[in-house]
Amino acid sequence: MLYDILYRETRIKQGERCKPRFDIALWNVNERFNLNLPRTNNDVESWHSRIKPDARQNLTVGKVIELFRQEQSYMESNLVQLFKGTVLKKKEEKRFRKRSKYKTCLELYDKETVSFHLNGLSNLLSDN
Image 1 (cartoon, rainbow, N blue to C red):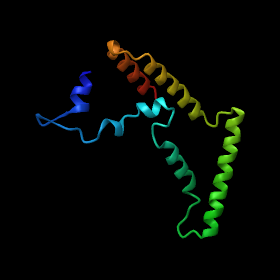
Image 2 (image 1 turned 90 degrees about the vertical axis):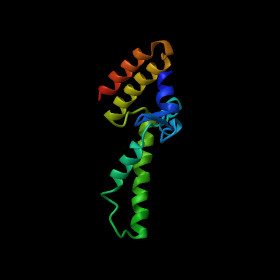
Image 3 (image 1 turned 180 degrees about the vertical axis):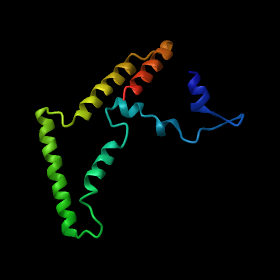
Image 4 (image 1 turned 30 degrees about the vertical axis):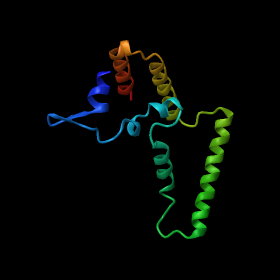
């Protein structure tokens, strides 16, 4: 594939070829996607933003324990909702639909129709 030759193996920089700064295994999310793992750390960021208002500076050990107790309760109630089949947020439903479209596109991938797939992925990415 031309992409592999031009970027993955070497990268053009000021007229000369050099190794890419980051190996493709580091930034490629295809394997994570195929294993149904999250592509980003958005879940960690959402947890952090949920905890941040409660976590003030100079917390005592007792307050930290109470904070974690509340977080555990929140997560357990969400887990019960998931086991019931409830979608927790609209964003999750939208993310699931988009992920299904990505998966379909990747399953139908064929090296003969690369431009077709790139156009499809481009359309999916622009559907934010």
